[in-house]
Length: 333
Ligand SMILES: Cc1cc2nc3c(=O)[nH]c(=O)nc-3n(C[C@H](O)[C@H](O)[C@H](O)COP(=O)(O)OP(=O)(O)OC[C@H]3O[C@@H](n4cnc5c(N)ncnc54)[C@H](O)[C@@H]3O)c2cc1C
Image 1 (cartoon, rainbow, N blue to C red):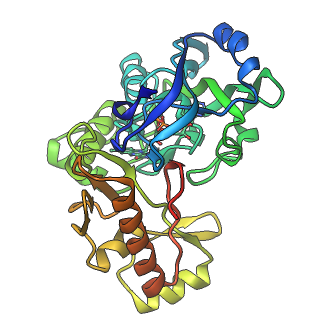
Image 2 (image 1 turned 90 degrees about the vertical axis):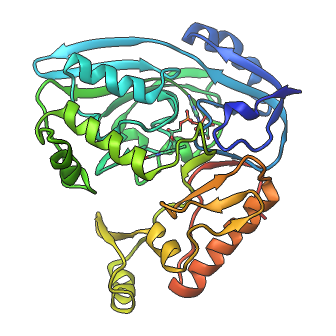
């Protein structure tokens, strides 16, 4: 068995029968057909993965594809990036080039290939706002295909890729950026942070600096404190449900999400007094209740117990079922 625990940020034990690094699209086309019916799992940076069963009797695929190719059309920049690039490095590289759009998404861990899977988002911007096209290997068709962003059914932490686990391997993502800044500073504490640091609210590089500072102050660094970022999705509910909850809990934060309302799951967990609550080696993070951390000794049963407690407490008080955000290998129940 191959020891892969250190390739995940939650540091739950993870071993696999084999691991296969894929370094190019040609490499994928040659090796994938024979794996079409084999148990397989795609692993990028391991920052959105919860391993509940330590032994995986299949092949772990690591798409370490690197390319960074730009095409220009007036002020529009179309940038094709390989699945193996670190997301944050790509954000910083685009800003250095003066290609704007990704500044609010700075410091999100993980690789480019996973970004479309759950339509990563932060500070009022999502990948879907800058995703133009995705090149995929389709295990069902055994072929490389291109899907335009409109075909990916992006939603809140959702896409057609997440809907069909195991079917698609992301090879490259083409981003649509601009040489003209379009600052989005109305979300969270970006404006306050820019003012505090004497930074410009119209310079995308300054916005990225502010986002990085806020994230560093609020979120545990997975290198020091194992975690997977937000553990639960914010519930999205019809406006009548939100209004009813708002009448009972006037301080609950609410955000418009199309015709529906998104409620802050972290606020609910905090309201229930669960911040800092510990089960074995797992805890609800002291500063950000949406994050569960492992002190390095936690096991899958500790996590199962903590997750069950959080979910049943939220259900009992708010009547809502919290969905787990990261991908799971194994089951909670
Ligand atoms: C501290 C911290 C903060 C975070 N903040 C945010 C945030 O603000 N916003 C946000 O959206 N997320 C956030 N995340 C979650 C995570 O960083 C993202 O979901 C990221 O895109 C995961 O990338 P990864 O390469 O680590 O994916 P992995 O954990 O390796 O994989 C996640 C899923 O994607 C699949 N996958 C990976 N690569 C590919 C590929 N090439 N093709 C097909 N499937 C693939 C895997 O099979 C798995 O199902 C945070 C995580 C941490 C630890």
